[in-house]
Length: 501
Image (tube, rainbow, N blue to C red; front, side, top):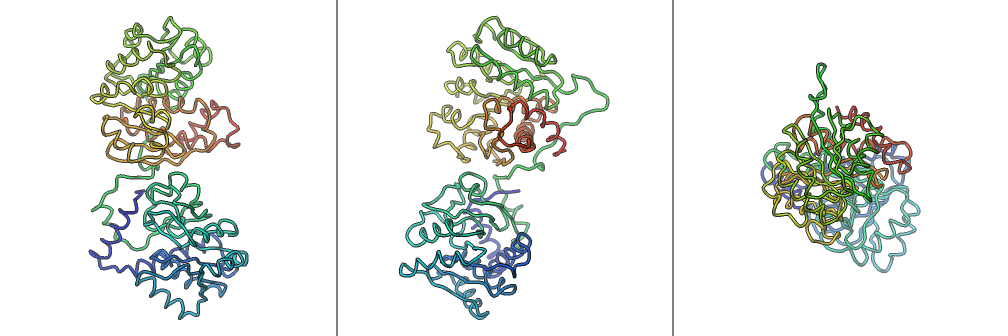
């Protein structure tokens, strides 16, 4: 499913009106009627509820007026609250139609603002049609007061298109914002629905069609997509096969301080279905990993940290069927950086750069621009270090993810509650997962999982998308969210894979 910005949505609306002759008034009518249909499906018999519809000055307010008029077909307990004069012809037209239906209107000003809490206490459902996706400035004055009252007193809040006060383009709160239980958006979801804090304020999201021609999505393709199982395939398992049929992964990691990270990555690769999984690391760490899972093939180095002297040892195991993961538990010693530089420079197979390896390549960025099949999987802190920026500048910055991916000829998966993935051309937003992944070691499992999927069919982007989606889905399957060992999520990966096949 495509995800649009506010400007992209405006363009699609304009093209619908200008090129296909569907008026803005018709689109507003369809938006309002479709919202009431969602309310019926979600709430049941609408005659059992009383509704308070808050309308802003623009077309979002016009949508609210259509909703209010349609609700009058189910119940007389409908009141429209106008916070200011209407500014569009379509909204004013729908106000007149609503009045002709006998609809009740309450105008709010500074003089009667204290009536709002009383109105809210006497209503079951609040419809938020104050601001739409075009909002670009902070909410202030009487609008901010009304929104704060709604958040305090509303029993159930439904937002039209996007919670008022949330930026459709960044998901940031512009001053203050509605906290919705349900949001009904039109034609396509917006970026602000999927990134935080907007995602937390959206509540349950419903996307409805309002009559925009389907051909527009072909004429005007979109670079932003909500990641679903339509965007990847699960590698086939053959009836006649052997371990060489499913690729080979080498995990390079581990150090004196971090002994568990490379094991988690190796187990992720095994759960993905990889035929052969090697682990290169300090001897004691590798030995411990093999004792835990004898199927891991050891590549032992003699020191507690990697150094450039170990490059040839590892390279001897890399062939054209190999996918490399470098980083889990490597540590940040200077000698490790020289090792990372030489490995990354010499490897010509898909390589996933994770964890401490991202720290080391932050000083080698020019060396990776000419690499093919490179995947970088940072969390926001690592991405900030890689780019020499602050975390606040990179967190949920999807445009920066795409620009960086293109600049460094790589696939980047910026890991967060909403993970953002780009190959320099498209952006994918992944919303699977929950707080069961908010633990040390989750990223290590993910890097191995991605490598394991890539190893089986050689499709790098497919492996990244599949790995991110499946890992989040596996976390959702754990019954007691957040009270898991991170290794327990490994046991749910096969079930998650079966869900998307």
